Length: 501
Image (cartoon, rainbow, N blue to C red; front, side, top):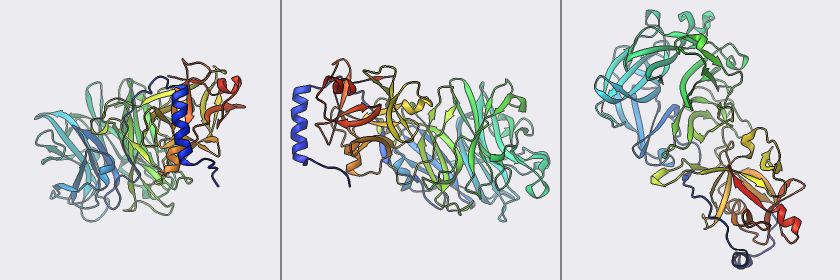
């Protein structure tokens, strides 16, 4: 049972009194997360292998249909995609490409007709699935909804062999097409490895040459079910290029995401790519998420956040079919510059939408909380417990998105969302602080909300008053975070912190 020892009226009166006597410190930085949502962002049946992007005030979404039609959804908020209508932008009629549309990927590129959207997809004949090849459409203008014109098939393998899951990667101003195919054009049944290939594009629908092999599934975590590298999609930051991909067989719950980094000068050379030793994103049995992969990345509307959209199943027994749903969450970056995709969140977790939705100004502030009386220690989460530590490793455990208080965004209040566990906030539970997923309840929102006031020991610092227990403040005791009444000088120091980068 939760401890609740004061009535709401008493809490309100005490809050007012404390605000009058203590005063409010520096106003928290404004934060503008988007509308809250829960995964999936798009449900069955047309929701596997998703692509999602933001352009001129709207999100656009497309995914595998298994049919001869390509659909796009459009919404000004990420949350709105779930109920946005599917608009048919293309119906296939090309020889040997009338059905089984997979893995569409959209890119705004400069082509012979100026800047246009190019929609790449895999398709084949009615009988699945040996006829899959890459095809591309071109928009009439710069509206992602089209209309679209068929520009042709991309011949990427010897004898126009099987190829799927293509997308465009731009490095040094040059466009490359990255895709998946079997090495030596030999399928699983003959010992082939489904691998990653690359070809330079002379224009958005013309490869300069057949694909060059850059990655094979050689590591144990890439070979569960079948040896697979597929679904390549680029992720770039601070001059570094990562080519992320899906690994292992999609029919298993161990379908996951890995990455290569471009460490050489020639993207067409296998020697220019270094494979990261461990997967970046994989199943979470605790969160009920299985086979999370085949993904793309997109920016928040204000350009300050990186997000992933991916498909996953709710059961370990589901596979490659229409049970998969599209999910999205914010990603982070490790101090060494590598991407931190994190853990796929539960569908029960309430997530804040991307920063800047609907024209909201300003980015969400990412900060650490430094202890006043142990200045070498910072608030961090460790196995979901909250404490203060020095030399925090991994460093992301001590970073929080400081947002307006979840309890109705009351003026002067803040909540602390983990950078590397989206949707998880510091909240008190029987007076002890933990990192827990937002379950959407009023109790959670109140427990995760704190009123920022002038530091109890030093007014140049800050203290954080519990929103629903206003006689208690966030403080550390034996390095563990709690909310307690504060009366002594030691307690005032324990309850004083600095928000810092």
